[in-house]
Image (cartoon, rainbow, N blue to C red; front, side):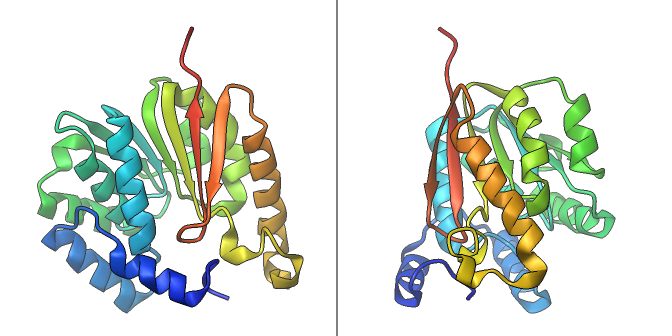
Length: 218
């Protein structure tokens, strides 16, 4: 099963989805489809666009750059003075992303870090108004403490693919080679939903997205 909604709902949402999509981003999506590179599905991209615009972040952190499609979407939805830090351990993907950012003319607004996110998160000290977590799914549970620490008061944490093809919600769907990832994702969601100071919901769009707001300082 490749989707978490009924196919006709998924197709309807895909057709209805609207989000900033430049010529560079359109070319990136074509490349991703041709080469089998996962990028945000249209409905998820539309949802992310609305979330970023609602928060109006001046600083954003992305964990999992890939070829930079979601990076450009986040940046295009931020205020013009907004800045994005994006992290990925895959050197080839980071270089593809760098070329795409240059083609879009936004390299001056993006900091690319080509290292393992688990290492990077530990030494980051600046806070971010918006964090998008879309890295290795089995590592979400390990990233969570630093994501909470780095999130500004009143900021938003969005995590992608949290329902993992529906396997997280239904044992009958779990494939043997994915058992460890599913167990860790369930542990992550349990920790996320009960995290002090965070208010979280899970939305069955794309492959499932969680949205968390950090309580503002009182």
